Length: 272
Picture 1 (spheres, rainbow, N blue to C red):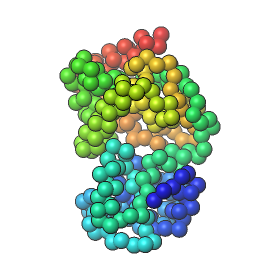
Picture 2 (picture 1 turned 90 degrees about the horizontal axis):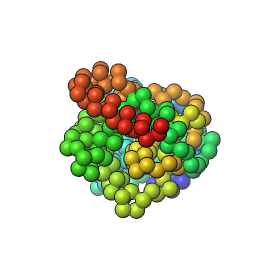
Picture 3 (picture 1 turned 180 degrees about the vertical axis):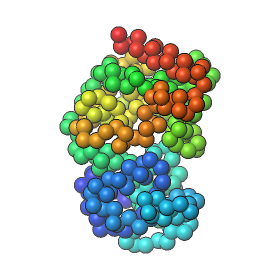
Picture 4 (picture 1 turned 60 degrees about the vertical axis):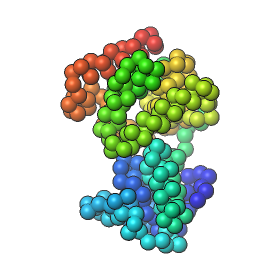
């Protein structure tokens, strides 16, 4: 189903019974947004590949094979881009043709309209807001692995993303990241793809693109800039922020934490 903007999405959801495909952090954030728009009453179930005996927010989590086709129902695919194509192909194969991938609308649902759209932001300003966590370092190490400068960057990347994703999603996100690096290498920076940051330059979407730009010593990145109406922890799982404390809580080995610290220092040298 083709939806052009958030207002149109809200209008469609108002008229439908909603099944949310997914049970991870995207689905959780989406359901919270539906509550804020007084649309949660239209949600009758969460859906996953296999279902679950555990409820989510008081709603059942059913297997896709248990879901019946209903003309009044729309399936909101609330998953990361890296796994959405397989899910949509399965839905179509099972006869579900009324669906929408909601991730492109998630942040405008949560935060409203950007204060500024499609503007150049110096990466140095963004780095100043994220230098105290390891997310850029993790992506640098994966890029080093891509270029043969280490042999463990991919595994470190998957391990870190698996703190808040399942293993399959982390694997698919790595594949997507590798495709992004290859595309950037071949075609350069696609300025039509915007990252999203708050007015204080803290990233909440598009970190991979920012990391690649930084790795290639690009001075700026195109961004949509949003007002600070929510705390970053309301948007992302705390584990996704990956502070040193988070790494310690996850029982990362001292050697790995030291490597992440060294990599952060390497990025710091870029922006001195």
